[in-house]
Length: 303
Image 1: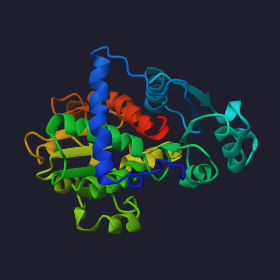
Image 2 (image 1 turned 180 degrees about the horizontal axis):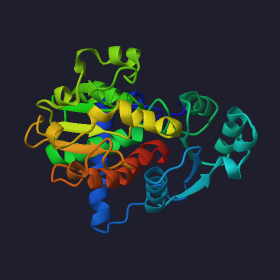
Image 3 (image 1 turned 60 degrees about the vertical axis):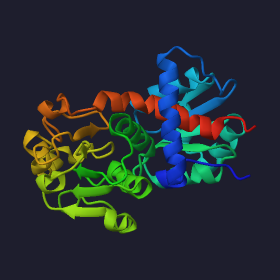
């Protein structure tokens, strides 16, 4: 059997993703009830971080511990990855000693190269192209709040970045409508837009995208590696802030999500971030539970 990886949402079928989320909700309930659940006893996850992180590192490290396994943190500063060793060679060595590898990096080609040369499952903890683990948490949060998301209308407002790309994949796998509003020059990959078919539509303004939406989502305007563009992006994206006026265009019971960290007063107003419609803290916590379910699928010994 070939090694299975999780590099984007499309690596799992719709049914597999729904089963994963159902299991994540069950795992969450077990934790809250104090029920021991340690199916990964003796398993070790190597975590390669070439980009900084709070939620990804804490959730995967805590998740492995709670599942009975352990996690090992590797940064370029502490390993030969940062001293020019080809990622192919690192993949062969690391995967001979651990049960799974998580990588958080820049170019998605590094994730793919790692997976191609690894004998154990590789998980994409974030790349410039995708952020699939965040989508698992977002979908778990929606399912807990509203049930299945099939047929719902989701508004993505802001940069056509890795989160936007993953929401396109989410629309494909979970069968929701995705309405995207981005400034000119910052729209998502045209090939990805085409892959979503009639589930995806582009809109000129934030208000247009949010109209009658069931869920409104945004992200920072300048992602990691784009810090030098920060001031220019503040000016370019100024009319794409998710504020009370934008949320007023959505359905009355619409939810708001953000993968965090948020820049209050930029991509989202504090009023929206702290409102009753905002489920950002539940969403952030669900990184832990959704990823525990993912780790079980990929690392649990087969019966």
